[in-house]
Length: 59
Image 1 (cartoon, rainbow, N blue to C red):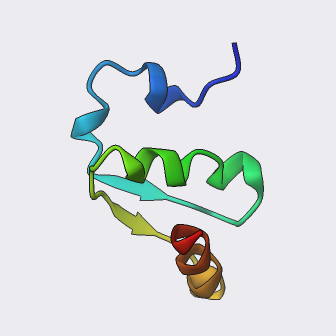
Image 2: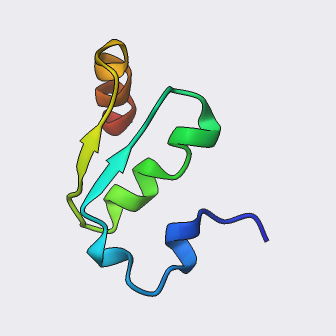
């Protein structure tokens, strides 16, 4: 089964922050789905990624 860890974590609602080191799919994959659950964690990213993550959230 190939699911992100938050999808099987029993208390994913308690996630307070996410740290993304770079924009590769193995680091950003699932972010959109996680945010769609209605939680609003702080997301920490390098400045160079700011526009790319914002665009990904709109899609």
